[in-house]
Amino acid sequence: MEAIVEKYSEIFSRRDLRVEDWFLMSSPWPTLSICLAYVLIVKVIGPKFMEKREPYDLRNILVIYNGLQVLFSAWLFYEYGRGGWFHGYSFTCQPVDYSNNEMAIRMVHACWWYYFSKYTEFF
Image 1 (cartoon, rainbow, N blue to C red):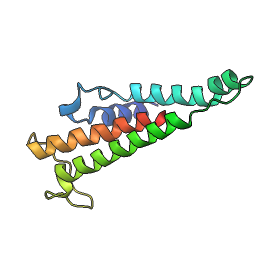
Image 2 (image 1 turned 120 degrees about the vertical axis):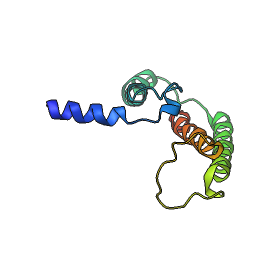
Image 3 (image 1 turned 135 degrees about the vertical axis):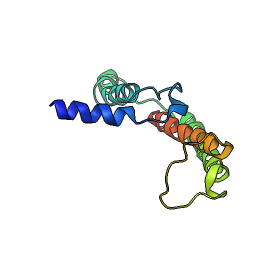
Image 4 (image 1 turned 135 degrees about the horizontal axis):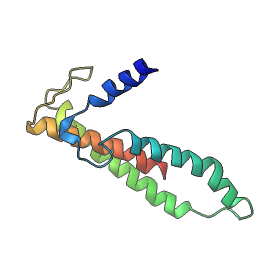
């Protein structure tokens, strides 16, 4: 058990210090908590809440939501292109650029927004 705890400590200590203070980046616990809350709401709370109710008509809201998600994804594609793919990044694996140059920071921001977009998809 001690070896497992040590290995997890080693893995969690490997992080990009440039994003240490960013929202949801300080540790894996906020992400785990949000994911577990999502499963609880979808599998337990939501069905219990809706068991004696008629389904909501969310068609218009979903059209707007999907349109915004498409715009968000298009912007992310643009950012990945400008941050690296069209400026020297390889389409295959390569080492992470931990420098503070403009393109590396732009890619870090794009990656964070991609990470955040996974939460918007929970909606």
